[in-house]
Amino acid sequence: MTEELSIGMLGYRFMGKAHSNALERLPMFFPDAPAVERDVLIGRDQEALDDAADQLGFARTSTDWRAVIDEVDVFYNLGPNHVHADPSVEALEAGTSVFCEKPLAHTLEDATRMRDAARQSSGTSGVTFNYRFIPAIQYAKELIESGELGDIRHIRGVYLQDWLADPSAPWSWRLDEEMAGSGVLGDLGSHTIDLIRFLVGQQAGDIERISGNLQTFVPERPTPDGSEVRDVTVDDAFTAQAELENGATANIEASRYATGHKNDLSIEVNGSNGSLRFSLENLNELEYKGANDRGFQSILVTDESDPYVDHWWPAGHILGWEHTFVHTNYEFLSAVAQGSDHTPSFEEGYRVQELLDAIERADERNEWVNTS
Ligand code: SOE
Image (cartoon, rainbow, N blue to C red; front, top):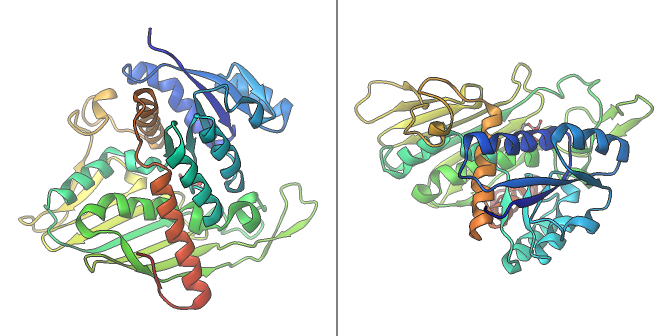
């Protein structure tokens, strides 16, 4: 009987449900995944915590992360960005592995502490950049790294939502610089920047210099209970241009005001011999134009030979958003069980944080910033 990995999870709302659902699916669809025990759910409101522990399948609860982080094998940090550093650093110092939601932290200073703690720890670190683990994205990476697209010339990463387009949409921690660090830049831009590096890093190198333009459209919003109005102190939308080591250009954009777009992450890569396009709203498909194709063809990336698909259903029985969390949990927990590194680790999470910080500095200075 392999040793069960005990899990402590801080946070039990949206991401708590996404990751708990993933843990529930693993034994049935990934029988070679390490066995896990959902041991302790961590939060502040005991009544809400009790209800969530029942719903998400945790054995017990705690309102004090310090009391439990050395009692578990793996600590999931799904809290607001400003809560990422202290519990993760103390868990890693105790030898506990840490899986932390993106962005790594709300400041580059905190991200540095987390990176350094991971370097010193016997535990495994991971950042939940779940979109790397979509079969179509993995296939795109294979095509790029095989040289099929030729030399990489352009990459476009755009992540559009519209949940703030209504000015009466309530204030939340994501709109506060003290708690979030940045707005859509860190929330959605971190995914896009990570994917750009994941897809073309080997062929085009890293981002060498970058610009930034951050905008806030609605400066204050009502609190959820309507009792007061609070300032919005982060960006609602951003654009950035970048140059990669091989001279490729990148255009990066994200917004929470893109009316009509719900969760629309799209990536396009243009090479000297071919191009590919991906949209999260059609996450099973990859549009590809190879050297001998007249135009783009749509490939349904659901063959059993495609990454992860053989764990699920026959070809054509498409996957969804939640499967990306099952895949990333499978890879991370397998690394923990083997005592090996996971990618993306806190090292990659730190590099993304450096680029987020560079975009903010470029915006403040109204000039491009070197990032190498
Ligand atoms: C923001 O609305 C959000 O929930 C992000 O925080 C997630 O990382 C993204 O996957 C979906 O949108």
